[in-house]
Length: 112
Image (tube, rainbow, N blue to C red):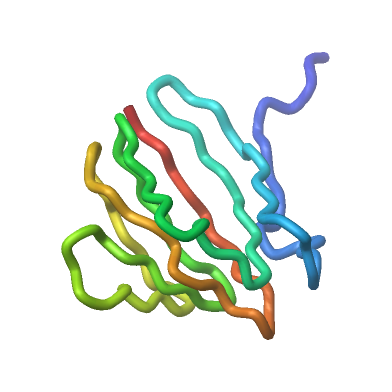
């Protein structure tokens, strides 16, 4: 009998309380998409750094909170649990801040 092809897990299990740097775990690699769980504990994009990607990125905050700035916007978009963004290719963006008091857990989908 072959192994069970169905994968399962808990996105909020084993979340570290403190990290020196953001933690990224690839949950699935699918044709045209990669799904990741990201854990941040106060991290932000380095000063002057902007993500500028060739693919669409969709993400949702599952716990904690974050401020994501889109280039050209005056203020960051504040994401709390349940808040999500879909960022098209070549739209520059950065993480201004993540919650320093509790882990911020993201579910991210990178689609080409």
